[in-house]
Image (cartoon, rainbow, N blue to C red; front, side, top):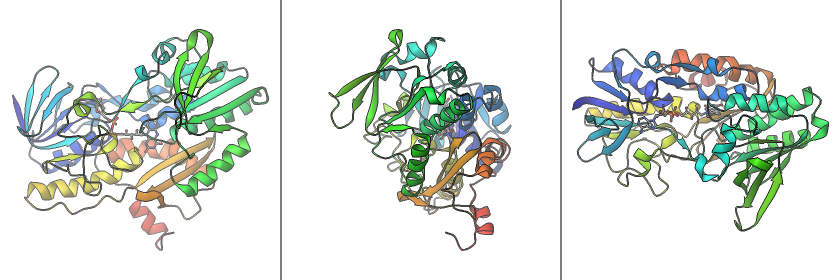
Length: 413
Ligand code: FAD
């Protein structure tokens, strides 16, 4: 058995960032990270891989290079978390005892909830892809290139997802590409979303509805992908308000955002999750609601923010402060304000940079109205944010743009 002061389960965006912060502050070998993957992906770039702007190789580094030398990495899945015994058992049956635990296992994709989807994704000739996975985002780009007109569909599932803007970003980028390649006049572009609105923050939803209108994209709300019949290029959708109401359509291109849920190690642990299967933490302090020595961050928690890397940057500082207090036997007082950001790519050099906090309140950094499409925001998303992620955030030195906001926009807007 291993034992450590701080155990981090999941070495993705949140896990690596917290490992960097605490490996620096605690003696050597105090921090253990359990993470099964040998590779670490910067997922926000998958959208630009789908649009032919970046390659998968631009999005990946070795996991070891993303973890601090002073942390121990156990390359394994966590199988069971026992919060009463303060131990984690891995798939290879290692037992790791901890004093403090950070859970950052992200989300998994439930392809099997849409019959026909996995089979379609794995078939190179299927015209079905998803930017959500490094295995399939390259296929999105080849499907766009092979599209010679007809009906293109883009979907948003009926579950919480990471980066809720990405399903429409790829739709806009595809539309922009079809315009460039002269197939737009021969095609219909449709965005089917389970949600009743295009985006959760009204200010940006209003701007996006104008984009949709300008681009002549059909938007169907409360409409969910039920199944795919790849052998005859048919997709079946149902209505959220009446799931018995279904409609079958023929597609020439189908981009799917898969349903998502927390990994089994979490969803099956009733002591740790709420009734939706997400880690039950205080939405301000990020401390577990029952076990004060457990914290959570990122996509796997039940905090009602937009599940983005941008949110994690902000959460990390709150978690750092609060966990250090907890380690000293004091009360966790730092509060996460729900900050999240979503660079909504609306074309090959355009972006609406949504930034907001809890309850859909905009919290913008730049001195211009960010609901307007901007070239600067496009290049920030494409070049600046990946740089910040690899070089500052994963090293534990980036906590979102608050400092910059105060400097360039001191009165706030
Ligand atoms: P992850 O980074 O996903 O890490 C979770 C880790 O846990 C993984 O490494 C996994 O292997 C590991 N794990 C899973 N199960 C177990 C287990 N049982 N035991 C141990 N480890 C386990 N964010 C933005 O800010 N801006 C964007 O523009 C943006 N665009 C996006 C576009 C796409 C297509 C996608 C997919 C994501 C996008 N995101 C964006 C979201 C962002 O990437 C995620 O919110 C962020 O990476 C989540 O970090 P995390 O640490 O919670 O989870």
